[in-house]
Picture 1 (cartoon, rainbow over the protein chains, first blue to last red):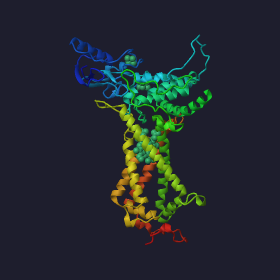
Picture 2: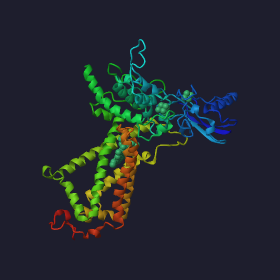
Picture 3: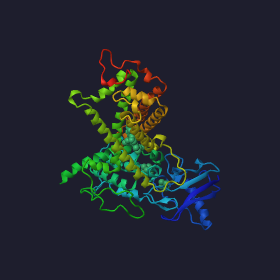
Picture 4: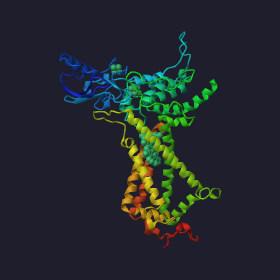
Length: 254
Length: 279
Ligand code: HEM
Ligand code: SF4
Ligand code: FES
């Protein structure tokens, strides 16, 4: 295959960026998208040019670092897959492929198509954990969890924090990510003690960085883990409840 | 977060490259008003006020169907609206309570729409430089602001026209609602305006009546499939009902001429509600 690659090149966070076009012959349909970029980078390096900076780690769709906009779609045309698992056979010989970084005030470009997603870390720090005493591991099956609950929590936990939901959202909202992280803990018994404090803190931290959801549903289409919009409804319900619950909880401490 | 209340705002969220675009207020208003200081809370308010306006739009549409029963029944309905509550309430008492409620709902709905839109603009200062390929966002969801503004402008015109009679001049007869509606709607430009505004309203409701379920967190596998159907059906119902008024007036099915129906129910006395009807 021979493709034309149009990639966003930007030297640093404050540098101006622009698209550059590369002719890429000799692409195997069995290559992953990142392997194709590796080939381009090898050639750029041999030519003494700066290779394209993109983030990657696991290359098996579980770390969430490889996100980029491919032909106007986060993670490219294949549904339910991250960029690293997208194969070149999804494209045709002679295609032009446009690659752009996520665009969001919360995701500043580091270089080229690599962005800083640490705004997600701020949300997790606000409550995406359970406080638990260290000590001997509890016995297995000590805490019984109904199967549908475990399944729903597992579906939420599948989120890899890639940021495609934010990238896809016309409002740059992070509702799908935040609601998945909340549901993952808020559904399980272990998450109950801190449920309302967690919900309030994570939602409010999210709002410091991201836009507001208008229920377009673009995030769900872009998500490599196909996280459900139902979690967003659950988050909205829990947030409004948390305001009441947390007020009550306060009166018990003081 | 665990045992003590986090001192919100004390720890800066800005680290490294990433800067917040919005800062939560240091002091929250007391519950439940503090909800309205947050984006998720504002969206919840949009949903609740949207439902209030949906209730109005539905009752308004059904009420106007009385037009097809002739001037007497129509004017009677208009009068009945003013005396809801019977002897217990002053004349127009309930009506004014509803009006104020709706006004408040509209104000909150528009205020939250405007402030959330500003937040959204700020959240993506640099747009995508290559064409975006949307797969779920539809025409309705992407034109909510435009359709909302069209409806707002229309409502202002509608009130000036039929409540205050600003445009009908001599032809406006206080209390003779049938006369006013038929005179106004028989003009082509005005009828077209009604068509346009009500199509915009239906488009707004097609997304809004679905979106509110998400914003309010009304979600269950048992009825999730039905939420889209409900929104489409509600929007369709309002569309058909509200479009029938300008269309049937323009085509002459309902008109000044059809006012041969007696204005007062048989045996009744002439009252102020049929003022001018038999001229
Ligand atoms: C008067 C001017 C209006 C403006 C500027 C306006 C604007 C908006 C905006 C920006 C949204 C959020 C968009 C979204 O969720 O994607 C919205 C939602 C909505 N609107 Fe309006 N709107 C107006 C009037 C109305 C009217 C008259 C009704 C009802 C008859 C209505 C019903 C709704 C509903 C039910 C929602 C969904 C709320 C939610 O998602 O929680 N709106 N409106
Ligand atoms: S919800 Fe989906 S799209 Fe968003 S960060 Fe998680 S895995 Fe990525
Ligand atoms: S490289 Fe880990 S998800 Fe793609």
